[in-house]
Image 1 (cartoon, rainbow, N blue to C red):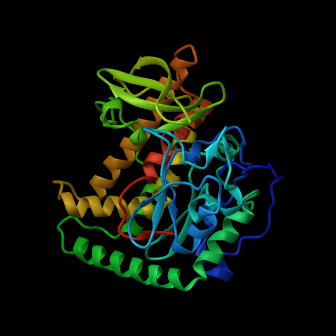
Image 2: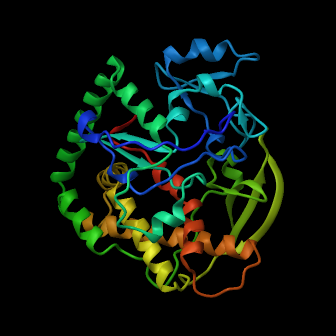
Length: 363
């Protein structure tokens, strides 16, 4: 969440053993919020009942919409615009911001366990350094207040009921999955994919992303230092890049770029970076549980292993496709994609990977 005043990063030991929270997917990361960004604010954050009073004291107060009881959401400013609290890429309610904003870029998922990961679309995360050092076990830097906010929320009476419901929901899903032909234990599949992540094949699938006509607020986003918050809209044969206004609507049409028909070639470092990212994807309980739910609900003619491998390859293809589009938009020469280009593809994809219906709960 953009800060009114930027502070320095803080470290500190992981508290996973003490709190019962799995924080291993935070290891090796450094974070410092970019006050000129605002990417995370192009959303409608949920507001708990106990948070409403302080927000409504702001002048003017934000507009709240009804959501899943007992929560409300802060209304966005027009189609594809930012949260009503954002002004000039700064949050005017930073001191009373709701819980989803207090923990970003941390993603907290309640399933069989409580697991924290990171939204790698956030430009405040030093993604390049993490990709270069996949074995780093260094404690995260700059995320102490976000981790503390998670711990405080988990200690509340409301969260105890949420945790219990999440475990029941996931247990019910797992029981349904076990009755299907082609089921394999998720942990067994996770181990196989971590040893050998399913990388994209040679041919890129047809683009199937959202179009501008579906609504700007449903398009994948990334932050560009020169252009601000940019949305990717599918058009016939390609992707159009749209710079968004904080107040809603399109500020500038940055061009339409053809999608590659073949999966772009990778340099050695680029291939290593993509494999590292896909391992991170399958390490997330939220992603595997969401895919398990899709497999059970839609009954594709594939085993669970085949279905998960296909979906992970699709994520990798999206990363490379968007990396190529971003490179073309910047006027860069073609050729194999390296680690830098893959990182930019991850930035334009990862929030969408996490934005799935899950059987558990998000804090």
